[in-house]
Length: 163
Image 1 (cartoon, one colour):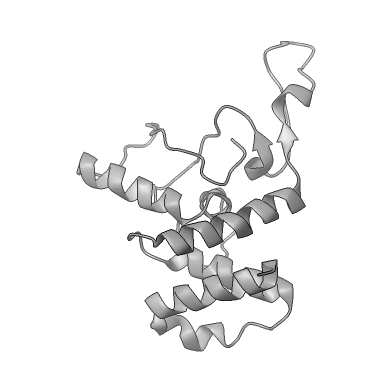
Image 2 (image 1 turned 135 degrees about the vertical axis):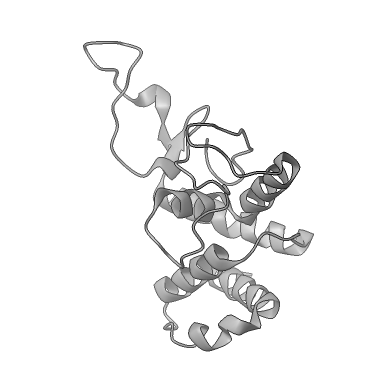
């Protein structure tokens, strides 16, 4: 199965779970970029719930390929500032960084913003990591029992992020 076929299969699986989005899905074009955008939109609006092993494997394949296409930025290749050799300033897509960890400026639910293709960093991270991140964050928040306070943090796996 090629990348486009994998994307179509993921879209089909998501629409089977969320048939209420079928009509909006028809508004997207059939070109590769439109299909990727539809997939991301469906990922952004999917509520946290268990994922099938088939979906996880397919999503991992698609997101790993997209990670290769975007390229990975390795932290050890970045140049430190003159003022402090322990500090590196870098401007770019945080989801491309191969570092020990990245910090998400998430909402208090830690689940992404649920707005299709919204340009916030929260959705960018959740889209690049995959739906397993949302599932893990949901489990953490349910165990905690209350919204995350501003300035606090949780540690999760990076899933399909290079971090």
